Length: 483
Image (cartoon, rainbow, N blue to C red):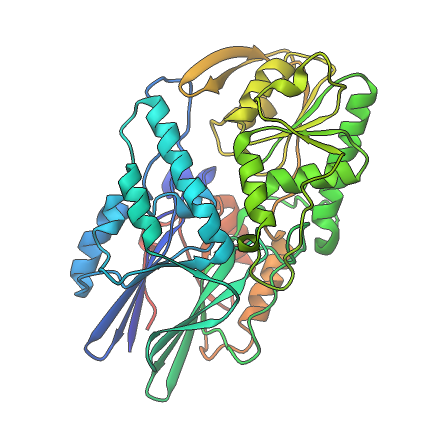
């Protein structure tokens, strides 16, 4: 038995100092004369926008161009299946690219949870529509999307799927990041020998409003190697002494307190959030904490409807967000929360990086001294939210108000960053790595550090001297012989 891991996504070199990059892995297994290849995640890169009208909205995973060469080198003709850990853009939006689909067989499936399968059409069509409006080279057309969706196999509950009878099976296991997100655990048998390889996906040990935190793998599955672990929150101690179990709730309470104070002073509070899971979650929680809430953005409402449908649930721990309530006004016309007939409140609008519907509100509210903008989580360099958070009050930023259209906007409003994200805090993450691998069959298990900036990966690596660590940000670590 032999096994290799190729990291195709993520950022490397200088760019990795601030960027996470898109997630994409190729896992190759040789059992005798049989060779099997699996792609785990296929995310779209976020591009840094400095105001240049030539900036594009999408890029394929960093090393996707090497896929054919890699397959040739290991003697693989096609990819058996693709696994998606969740439906966020940086993990799923590239799955419809021809550069990936041409390597699939007629029987290759895109395997994911039922909620991810329900969200995926929106993710792919959103990217198509953005690229179409920008008149840039399209990543894929509508036929490509429909062909991709025809391959989807939705898993309705955490269960083991047999891929190669008696030899290779896989478990999709809840990882706590958002509704429907999962870790992917391969169980590979060769004679009496068994190895298990885990890809964590974006990972949270703490509960959120829509789903519980990640449990440990089942007791009867001993993880041999942890091939990817999410290090997003490890660059700094964002907890500030808060326990992991209450961290998410406390960040929302902090957001609500700031919103209440802003509203009492006669100003609007604005937060940017991803339409998938985050926007409805924050709207619901802020309303529960006594705020008048306006949820703007057509995609947020459509995705909320999916979350509350049968397809939006797949495991124990998933909970309803209760969209239809008097405390939340869902708007159909972007920007209409600021109509003169509405009282000040908290506006929740996508996207999380400060583009899309929320950009219209940022243009109007950033110049107001009594307003407040709060980013709900991670911000990629060059995005609207990143610029606003780092601007001195009274200075101007170049805001992308619509696709490839920029305006100079003065930042007089207070700007704050919250970390109400579905990612584990760094101390909890290191503890969980030890728990996952405590019964490993390997004397020195592999641990792949990913989905974090170089400072984050530096910190986590320093805490794990007992493991064989490798990292997505180092070119020399992007091809690993596992067995």
